[in-house]
Image 1 (cartoon, helix red, strand yellow):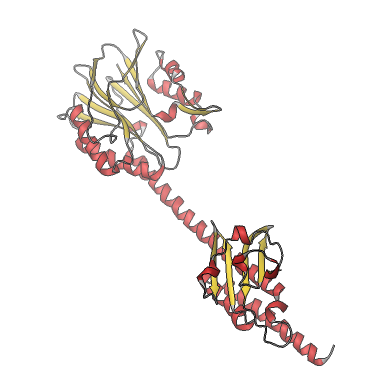
Image 2 (cartoon, one colour):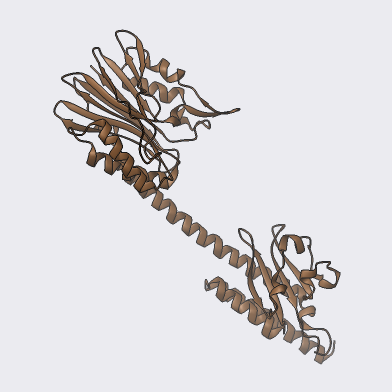
Length: 409
């Protein structure tokens, strides 16, 4: 090999090494995507005299993340899936049948782990130089450096995505803790010689749209409720939190259940703007008169079990869900005197609406069987949780589950 050829080969090798070193340093310096693409453009445009280029990268969809030398908007109308996905190797456009590629010279696919992750479309190469154009001579080098750049950019995206997901995870964990603070724990519920309450709360996601509560309205009267916001996730949880604040502000000894439901309907309509609604079971119980008043606003019917008579009663009097209509046309209040020891089981639909091979089934016989005995309401709820495999990760369960049990002596 002549000295001239050796010097030329050395210069070529030096150029490639410097270019690779430049890109590697940029990656190690954790430069942004834009900064990496700027260095990539310098190598191709300034060093290799490429006059026209488009770089497509696959993220959620194929996007052009770099272009230069493009003056005609029509030249940008390249459909990657239609025009490029068939190319596995470096290809000259003269063999392409796509009209969209007619103004380009070379297609350079970038493949990683057997999959297309990018395409470099090169045009307007410098054909005036003596001998072969650098763009054509160094196609394999262009493909290599393109691969390095694209993989680096993808790693940046994945890293940023992981940071975002971690931030979201922490936010959801905090939201879950805050929501658990809004919902009374079973140990905080009243347990006296007149009434005993117990509960179970199990959101399907980190946060949920279920809610139960109790309020001491006077020394002789207690109020309690269970509700379910339509939908799941953060939006349902936010509406639930708003609903809890309104309920606690409005639910007093003086207000009637009918007036309370009407006011809650106004508040939910204002907060949800008609996009969500809430099913609600709302009740008052008076220790002196033993009267139970309730309104069931589109919620699953709580089950009342009278121990002495071995009888199940469904608490179904009420109205449509809260926030469904501007004005609720008819509200029926249920009222009954509980003359014997009884148990009430309130629950959300996640407990009974289960996914089976045919779709969604609603079956209450299991929980009815668990109620129909002299055991405490707490034992009944524990039996239901076991039989429905709630804590075992049953794949049939696809919604939040909340249970509020009331035992009246």
